[in-house]
Every structure is written in C-alpha cells, then in structure tokens.
Image 1 (tube, helix red, strand yellow):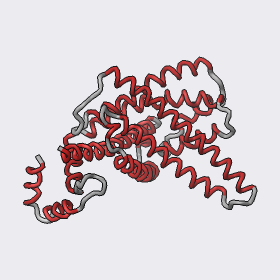
Image 2 (image 1 turned 30 degrees about the vertical axis):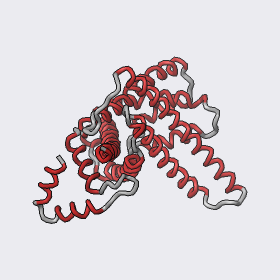
Image 3 (image 1 turned 135 degrees about the vertical axis):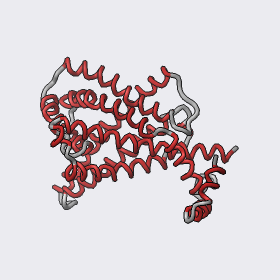
Image 4 (image 1 turned 180 degrees about the vertical axis):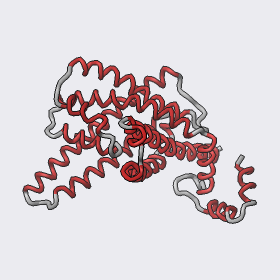
Length: 306
C-alpha cells in the first residue's frame, strides 16, 4: 500500500519533492521513522477511518450525558466544604462552554447549587453514572474502529472499563477545580501580604494553566487506556496535538458564535442547543485526530520492528 501511494505521489510535481524531503526528516525517539512515514499512515487512517461518523456517535452520547452529569455535580456542590467552590465551578463551566450557551442551564444551576434535593441527588447519581458510562463507551468504541486498531475488548469488559474511566474523569475534573480554588486563595493571601502584585493577572494565568493541564491529563488518560493494547503504546504526541487543537478551536469557535452565528435568529432558543451540539462534535473530531496520530505511530513502530 505504501509503494502504491509513493508511486502516485512521485508523478505529482512539487509533491514528489516534499515526499523526498519528508523521508529525510527522522523523528527522534520513533525508531528512525521519517516524517513522511507518519504523515502517510496518519492521513490513510483519517481518510479510511470514517472519522466524522465516529465523531457523531461520540457527540450524541456525550450530549446525552452532559446535563445529567452537571445535575449530579451541581447537586453535590452545597455539600462540598470548600469556600468559593460553587462560584469557581460555575466559572469553570462557563470557560468550558462556548459563548452564549450558559443561559440554557443558568436557571438550573442557580436552583440546584443553592438547594439540597435528596431525591434529585439519588436520581442524578444513577442517571449520570449510566449516561457518563455510555459517553465514555462511545469514545472507546470510536477508538477501536480506527483503521489502525485490530484488537477489541469484549462488550462487558468494555462497559466496565468505561464506567471506571468515567468516574476517574469526573474525579479529575473536580480535583482540578478544587486545586484552582485553593490556588486563587493562595494568590489572594500572597497579595494581601504584599508579596505579589496584580492578583487578577496571576489568577487568570493559573486558571489558564489548570485548564491546559486538565485537557492534557484527561486526553492522555483516554488515549492510554482507550483500547485493549493502547496502555503499551505511545500516547503523548496525540495528547499534545489534541490539547493544542482544542485551544485553537475554543478561540475560533468563540469568535464564530459571537460574530457570525445566526442560530438564535433562525431557530430561537433551541439554536443554543444546536451551537452546543456543534461544539461537542468538533471536540469529538479533535479527540479522534489525536488518537489517530498515536495509532499511526504505534502501527508504524510494529511494522518497523517486524
């Protein structure tokens, strides 16, 4: 297959020169593999891997899991003995969501975060665990249908792994927000003592760093344990690519929603849900792009070893 692709590219002016140059560039730490080898395998995986269809399955499952998960977390907020945790969680939620979509859940957030509903807590716990597991299971299923992945887990084991990963990702999210709260408190104390200046600047920088770390750690966790053999594979290149693309997408999507989006004019209040669904779908594509990079590198390593 590689020979066929190379022969076709050799007949295209300028492209054939780039192919020769790409073969000369060796990637450190990848057993002498060239940049061309990785790009070729990566593009083949994207083209033949039905990327957008797999992303659609992930987006649907995650969208279904989003609101029950938020209900569960927000119901727990009054029980969390951390001063400022409620405000920081809502602020973090606004950071993670695209502009002009917070109004969809604003009333729900205000009501649940300030009241303790025992019945809702019980129902939210059961529903969120089930739907979060379905969301993560959709991600793992999309990973396994990669063009470069040949081995799969059985259905029961896959669901149990998805449940464990869903709970772990929830713990990572809550831990990140809690650390961010304590960081802001620490910056405030240092500012009051005169050891730091411009408290808002340092809090903003710290929040941005925690946001980046949250994405990188969560994505790395998914890539490392996402498939049957992936825990032995390289996962960091794809995690870094996904993190960078996510940051760029956040910025561009925010500009699009604020400046160019006409969903609300066309569909009214339901337009906000369409924007949110589009946002989840784009993130799903980026998640798969990072995984395909890891899968391409690891398949090339296997072929090179043989």
